Image (cartoon, rainbow, N blue to C red; front, side):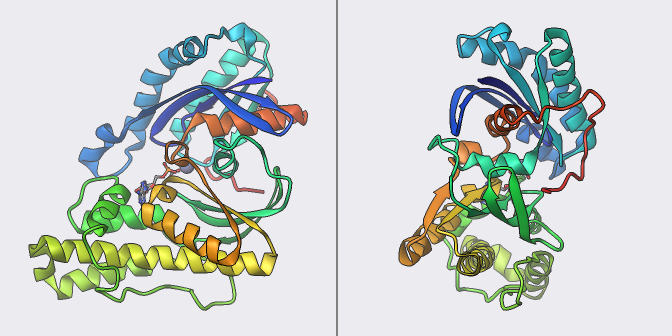
Length: 339
Ligand code: KG4
Ligand code: ZN
C-alpha cells in the first residue's frame, strides 16, 4: 500500500510517499523543508514562526512530492500524520491538513506518534522491519529515551531523560559558547579539532541502577567552567576543547547506558535515531562498541535521523495494515507518550 506521510511537529515541514508491504518499506518520494534559517536569529524554535512556515510550505509540497514520485492522489491508499508529541500549533497544521485531505478523498487516515516514527527511521534505508526484539535509542532535541521494542508497535520505555534532552544540551551549550543554532552540528565541527579529555565534565547517573539520563547538570558544569575560566573562549583551541570534552561526556553516557541495557535485555540489535544520531562521534562510538560486543548497530541515515515524513508514513502504513486507522475526533497531543 502507498501511504502519504505528513510531518509538522516542530520546525521541519515534510511530506513523503512510502510503499509499505508486509514488513518492507520503500520510500517513493520525499521532501523536507527545514526552517533553521527562520529560527536562527532567535537562538531556538519560535512556535508561531514554525506554524506560519508549515502553513506556507505544506500546501504546495503535497502535489510536488506526488508529482516527483510520478503519482496522483488517487493512487494513495492512506494518509499518515504526526499527532504528537511536538508543538501544539505546528501539529495542528499537519493534522488539520491530513484530516481535510482524508475527508475530501475518502481515504483512511491515521495519527502517528512522532517517537514511533524515529524508531522506524533506522529501518527506512535497509527496508525491512525487524523480526526480533531490540533496543532503540532516540536522541533528539526534545527526547532522549532507550526503548525496548518487543516488536514494531509494542514498546517499553526503559529509560528517559529526567530534564534536558541530549540535543537540547548541545543547543544550550552552543549558546553559552556563542555558536549559532542549532548547536549540535556546530559543536561536532569544533570537536573535531579539540581534545575530548581536556576537561573532565560530569557523566550524570552513569553508575545508577537504572537507564534514565540527566543532561542539565552537564550544561551547568560547562557554564560554571566558563565562568571560572573565561580566557578559554579567547582561543579557538580552547573553544574546541570545551566542545570536544562536552561531546565526549554526552557520547560516553549514551553509549555506556545503552550497552548496559543491551546486556540486561539480552538483545542483539540497537537502533539509533533522532537529530543527535547524526553526530559522527556518537555513530563511531556505537559502531566500534557494537563490533567489539557482537551487536548489530543500525544507524538511521543522517537525512532520516532528523524529523521527516518518511518515518511517519512508514508507521502509518504499519498501523493502517493492522486496521488501526484514526477517527475524526482524534486530536493533536503535544505530550503524547510512547505507550
Ligand atoms: O530529531 P530532531 O531533528 O528534532 C527533534 O525531534 O527534536 O533533532 C534536532 C536536534 C537539535 O537539538 C540539534 O542540535 C541536534 O538534533 N543535532 C545534533 C547534530 N545534528 C543535529 N546534535 C549533535 N550532533 C549533530 N551532528
Ligand atoms: Zn524528532
